[in-house]
Image (cartoon, rainbow, N blue to C red; front, side):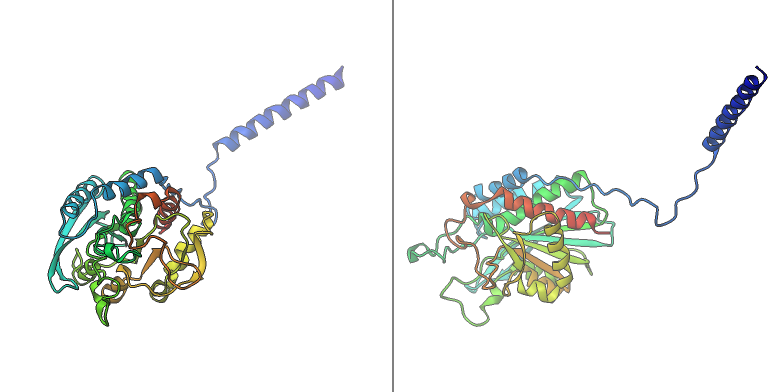
Length: 337
């Protein structure tokens, strides 16, 4: 009996000691984490909605061909301004006039949405919103002077950026964003009438903005142009001027697209050089800017099948392609630090 009582006493002391030890541990202040152990802040990337982007593409097309000087062009510009105003901190309509290939001066409107105006670190996102006045790639020459819908060539890039604007209004990125819808991009000379030096009649809106940015001494760490990003079964090789002026941005965007599982879209091949809005942003504004544009990945710079024809309409717009491009660019800008 004496041995049993001793064991009971020892057991009780052990239990009490153990309980006291736990309580002491609970009252201790946790050690500070080392810098390598600190957790990175969680970044929330809003979910891109392809249905919403598709709606924004269709809304533009429903106005009719958005040829500068037309009623459809005027109505669409008002809608773009008003819709972007519901999302951005502020919107600027940059009115300008540019000489087109016919020799006349054509009025244009660049529509600019500004997010996080106070941020010095900025990214430029852009697309063109006008549509081609000539269906000059139609086999039937009698149709060459017919304006096109420009569902893919113009409206698709604007649709993706408008959906991004909607999401950025709800969940702000950590840096400043400027979205620009350029006008008078597609008013170049008709096929067969082009002559040396006629390239300057393309991308007139971006030429004007690059010389006259909406903010004095404007700068951005880089720019991304979206052009023809809605066609079915698109492939996006490295466009030549993009690879020359901004190879590090090409690498950043393509790597992100491939990490998201879109390797069959963002392909590791180089295409030719395309005269587009990004060229003048690079050359005049000095902002390294790439062009995400659907091209033949074999390197011959061939555009999509219905380019500059009357079949560039909503029948050929793919929600999947809009989704791939939108999600990729969303990840790029939200992961930028």
